[in-house]
Amino acid sequence: MAPHQVSTTDYHTAGEPFRIVPEPPVAIEGTTVAERRMFALNNPEVDNLRKLLCCEPRGHADMYGGFVTQPDDEVAHFGVLFWHKDGFSTACGHGSIALAAWAVQTGRVARDPTGVTTVVIDVPSGRVTLRVRSDGERITGVDFLNVPSYRLAERVTVATSRGDVVVDIGYGGAIYAQLNVAGLGLAITPAHYTDLIALGREVKWALNDTEHARHPVDDRLSGIYGTILYADLGCDENGNPHQRNVTVFADGQVDRSPCGSGTCARVASLAAAGRLTPEQTLVHDSIVGTRFHARIAGQLMSDGYPAVVPQVAGTAYRTGEHRFELDPADGLGTGFVLR
Image (tube, rainbow, N blue to C red):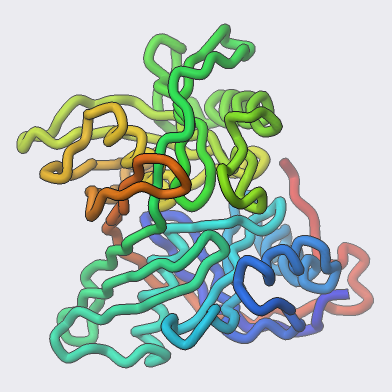
């Protein structure tokens, strides 16, 4: 059974929920966050806590959150295990933005009087450095520097119910297939929500166990985490590339934000294709019309690939504080998911 009571603080980043558990009431073992993720994947007690907070009736099929943990070392302020309806993910940009805002608002990280506070978080894929911008007590924006990101493969053909499609595959802390929906009779709008989910799942599972989905040095990061379906909107008035996307991740879960780690994968793929330079900014919109801005903050070799260090900017807002309970007599236990 999961613990009978657990307290959370909830945020949303560009419309995507993030449920923060500052003090998980279960032991999560491991010397690094990456090791703790592997522990959580195989520990029923930790997984029951995830289910309790993510599944209906306390959550929903598109819920997302994280357990705050110790960092890998004293350089970072804390660590986090990200979770969703199907398990524990390796990266989460929107969650990192929410955590940084929470850390400053709660005083866990002291607010810098200059108005720019640095928050360092260890996540399963590495270390993420965030800058929280404030005007007095009000947070006006958060940006993060992600782990090195790179294109793993380009123009991979995948057979789907809509015919053959061509995808690029990129790594941004998690591995994403990326598909332009032009010519498929789809638009990145809520009206096409169900069809976008179906196609995203098809592409993910067609590629998940192939060589294209293997991380080059750490197999714990292997597998297609999500499919980014996007529409190219040309350039904005300043000549910056402008795209609208929906990321279908895990098994049919939909990111309401433009997807933080997915945006990093897009930055890597666009840079590799020569469509995004360090002087430009990617304007990245979500299916609900919210927006991230992303740029190339650095270039290097990583894991044998030409890589970029993406910087992604957005903001997060607190939506509530909760104390969830589980009645031992409740036959539904930790809940259910109807998808």
